[in-house]
Structure formats: C-alpha cells, structure tokens
Image (cartoon, rainbow, N blue to C red; front, side, top):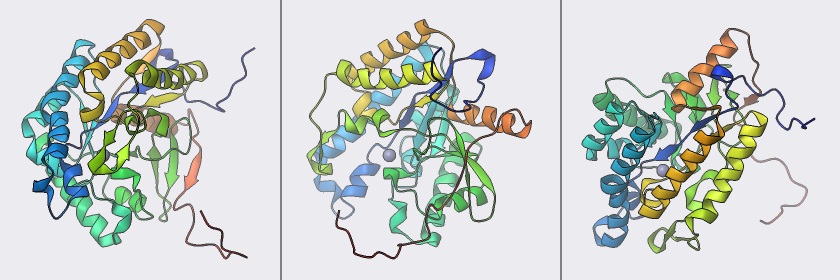
Length: 306
Ligand SMILES: [Zn+2]
C-alpha cells in the first residue's frame, strides 16, 4: 500500500487526482522601474527583454492555452494592465483570470500599511477597468508579502492569495480580525527565476538550464502532486518561460499531464471557489495558519549571524 504523504488532501472535481494551474506573473517592464526607479530609460537592453514578455511571449502562451482548451491565471501589476490593454483583453477573452500583482511590482513589505493599501487599491482599479470586475486573487510581487497583506486583502474582498509556500495543498490563513482566506501555495521549485533567469541588470544570474532539465523539476513536482492528491501551480514569467524553446517544453509538459489523465486544469479562482465550497458545505477541513507568523523579534540570548 502506498504511504500517504499528504494528510487529508482535498477531493477534486470529477475524481481528479490533482489540480493544476499554469500561473504566469506578467511583469513586463514593471521590473525595469522596480530595479531602476530613477533612470529606467538608460537600461534599454533590460527593458527589451522584459517587453518581449508582453509583446511576444504572452500572446504565444495564450495561443498554447487556447490550443489545449485551458483557462489559466495571469498575475499582472496594474501598471502593466494599463500599458498592455490588448494583451489583457486577449487573456480575458480567452477566459483566463487576471490576478492582482501590485501596481509597479512594489516590494510591499518595505512600506507602511497605508502605502501598501494605496498600491493595492490602485491595482484593483486598473484591473476592474479592463475586466469589469475586481480581482479575487493576489500574488505579492517579489514574494514581499507583509504583515499587513492578509488583512488588507480580506478588507478588499479577495478570495485567495498565491504567494506563500506553507503547505502542499490549499490552506486557510487567519488574519488578526479572525477572518480567513485561502492560500493556494507554490514552492520555489516551480518558479522559473531559479531555472532560467540570467539578467545582469537584476543582479540575478542563474546558469541557463536546458528546458528539459528544468522541466524535470516541474514534472517531478507535478508527478508527486498527482500521486498524493495535491496541487501544482507555477510562478512563471513570460519573458523567461515564454521564450521559444521553453514555450515548446511547456507544450510537452501539458501533453504529458493530459496523457497521464485525471488532472483538473483550472484558473486559480476556480480552484479557490471549489475549496471554499468544500469548506462551506463541511465536506473538507483545511489546515489553518495564523498570520502574521510572529509579532516581531524574539529576545535572544546571543544574536546569531546569518
Ligand atoms: Zn512579478
């Protein structure tokens, strides 16, 4: 008998073995302005690579999803929503979800609660203008989820976040108010920055891997999710994973998943609605994590160095 490595995995629709969402963070040149807030105009090469993500890669990814009749999720900074309305409309027309990803990819844990709130509202407004409805999903830019983020998301009607890696399966986060919201977790092993991103300007230089090597990592995580009833989502970026050879490898991975069978492909907002429904009907109980994880520094006998 197979050991069950996930305690109490949620039931998935139609008896599926696992849920999958290819989620892209459509950052485009928001990263240029994040890294070079004072002289972005001087970094043309960096900007061109990022713009490729918006102009070439995202339409290509939409084409792939359409080919496989999949609806998935793109997290988009509000600034990018306004800069690339045609791409956003193509996503919306394809039935894909637009999730919130800041305004200009701010690292929000560097700011006050009020500043974080202003950024959140500006991003909501930009998405609502194009899609006609506010976003229900959030992914913190640069993983900079702050001690205020959950409470602000709850105040603004969000249904889920997908920034944290606290479990293999969806779980609930409980904020200071006692209200709860879903976390649809991912692991850094499904983030393409660790595999492909080599950008001097971003001071992030990974040795470029062959797509097959990187996709071995993604496939292993998917296989384990399938085996144990879990959940797999990606943190991929159009400028990195939408390049030709990697987009081709993505097609191979989707075909592999389809051939394996019993996989539920869905945008994250549908996965979150499914899980919330199970909880509301008393059909499944999630793990609950209280946030923030700590209130501040702990007294230390001697201060360790990193
Ligand atoms: Zn991002």
